Each structure stands twice: as structure tokens, then as C-alpha cells.
View 1 (cartoon, rainbow, N blue to C red):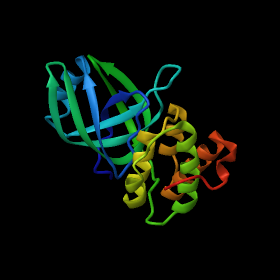
View 2: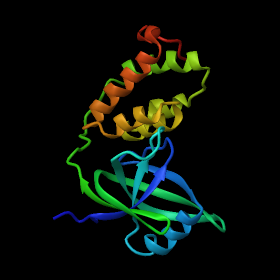
View 3: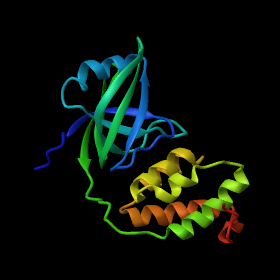
View 4: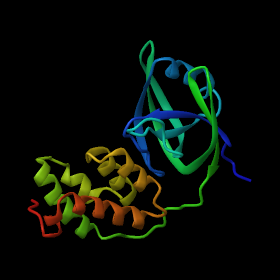
Length: 198
């Protein structure tokens, strides 16, 4: 039997994806923030982090998040410090006051400890960032662990919500890297050639 709750308050974020094994700061405001404090932060500390769709609604796969800490920024706004645990599928949901509560089923996808081709990814990223005139933190790209690198790139790169969702739903870290490399290369067909990187 899973030790994780089958029912979760679902918190919706625009163009934000939390990958399992990573941590993020997530702002929540309005009535949802007050409801979270009253309902979940004083009890289980678990929330469901779910991305909204550009055309409306939200995706049916999200991430179980453990709230490690939170800070009240304004009377109706809080910033959550959340650790991603594992992915889930939403079986059903209903709205209660300002919160969406979902019944969830956890997926069996894992992130195995395996290396991926950073060199191929970095070459593609170099051309990608050059074309977009973006200045990434190359020290982070060189030194972060595989899991943290994926989260950094998801946060930093201007991917569409459906692209981020595909990466979230990938079955392994190796598949995430493959998909990310494909996304970058398809953005600029010529980025298969070696980019200019310091």
C-alpha cells in the first residue's frame, strides 16, 4: 500500500513543471493561498503540483510535492518551497471552496541512475541559446546533477506548456534528456551542428 495520500489539494501553475527529485519555489496567491494554509500545510504537507493548459483547463498528470517550508509574502500571497516526490495521474477531482481536490494514482515511472550524453545536449543548447540571445549559467549546466540540470533547463528555457508536460511524463531521466535534446534541435534545424560555446 502506498504511503502517499490518494487525495490531494491540486495547485495549478501556468507554464511551471516540478520534476521528481527537485525543489522549487512556487508562489500562490488569493483565496487558494489562504485555503492551502488552512487545509494542507497544517496537516500532511503534501500538495499536487499541476500545470495548466494554454487553451484552458489543466493536465491530467502532475507531481506530488512535499511542502518543506513557506513564507507569507503578503496577506493573501505565500511562497511555497516544494520538493517533488513522484508523478501521479488524476482520476477525478472536485472543487471545494478555493481548492481543487483530486483523487490520484501514482505512476510507476522512475528515474534510474544512469548517465546521458551531456555533450550532445550542451552542443544543441549552445546554438539554441545563441539564436535566442539568452545567457544561461554554464557553470550550472556543467556542474549540476542530471536531475537538477533538467529542472534548471525547464525553468530557464522558453518551452511551451505542452513541451514541458511531455518532459514531465517521460518514463526515465534518459528519455527526458532525449526529448529535451530533440526539442532544442527541432527549434532550430541547424543546431545539430556544433554551437559556439565558451
